[in-house]
Amino acid sequence: MASGRYQGVRNGVRPRRDMLFLSHANPEDDLVTSWLALQLAREGYAVWCDLTKLLGGEAFWDDIQAAIEHRTAKFLFVLSRNSNRKDGALAELTVARDVERKLQLQDFIIPLHVDDLPHNEMHILLRRLNTIPFRKSWAAGLNQLLRKLRKQRVPTKRNFGPKAVNEWWKSHFSAGTGIQHRREKILSNYFELERLPESICIHALTPGVARDGLAESLAYPAMVQGDSLITFAQADDFAAELGDGRIWSSRSVKLDEFLPDQQNRNYVYTLLRLAWEKMATSKGLKAYMMSSGKAFWFAKDQVLKDRVAFCRPDGTRGYRSLVGYGSIGKTPAGEKRVRYWHYAVRPVPNPGATSGFWIKSHVLFSDEGRNIWESPARLHSARRSQCSDWWNDLWRDRLLATMSWLAGDGDQIAIPLGRELCVRLSKFPALFDSPVSYTDPVAGQEIQSVDDYRPEGREAADLK
Image 1 (spheres, rainbow, N blue to C red):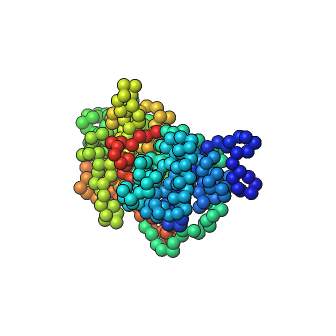
Image 2 (image 1 turned 90 degrees about the vertical axis):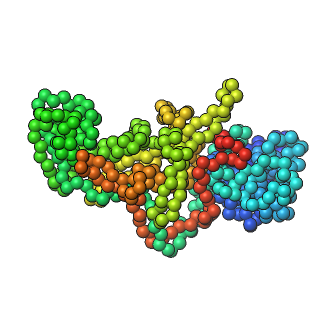
């Protein structure tokens, strides 16, 4: 194969069918085909595509007919108005159909429907086949295709994967490709506090008062350090829990004098975290303990139809699901098995000069919509499968929807620190002004996200 031409049967041994053949209309459908080839290669599949030659370090086969006859595991036909009438694409389709009939291969040809071509206008060789829809969302179409390839045990190869795609990309595109010299607003996951209180309180506890579990029993965030209760709240704010005589004395310290000490800064960090946790719990969110801290999630039916309407910083409006589900096969009795996913947020306080919270996004899973799985490994595996087609705009919108829900009718989230004291957190993240913008030279603006995608004609997506 030094010449790059496919040689077919050699020494009486037929090569293994381990390749995905991507057929498309050239150049009309190059954009979606290039994107799809790279995504499949990133998942470890050996891809034959005239647009990505030598991807994965393998030779490119010039003999198309031999490649389809002897090496192709699945023939992926990028179906569009263009490929439906293009001689080159239809010739490849005819070869694939002959191979499928001769060898009696099941689901050998997989049409990928990328535009609005009506079913009754499809080529006669394709009308009997079930197509995978890519028109509404490339991401959703890819996810459905990957599930099909995994279900039918199409083999992957070691020399394909993220590293191979990265090397191919670096060899074909310069670092400046896609850079646009125009300013752009960039959203972050950092939400600023309006201001922190001017002082922090240190209450000396009366000798003999039990310290264990004391802070957890209080209505407002506080922490016990030695014989002191450190908090933003006044002593009177704890009268209901502590009663008379449990606080010996109190003093306040200016926060700008308190914060420079690293240990004191850690105290304020903890108080802000506890304040968020109490606020989120009071609004009905559930807490799940992760190795990095508590994440707060929505249970099934906690909000109407499990969706939340919200407004983006640019004024546009939308809504997103914060709980969803998918089918994961059937029970031995033949009943459908379902797993639920739950969007979750984890707060990371910043008590610095520009105080606020980084809000980290997570996804958790349950069997019935209310009890999160205990196994971290099981959660990790489900997360990789479920979120493979969650693009940046979907993660962004779910974060914005959650913060909007916490804010209610206002533009800020009130986080109580005491009976008459609270800090106010913006429901919109901090924006950054970038001097340049970037357009993916392959994907461009065509890649769309999907919310609660379900394949056509089915109640729920089959998930790995």
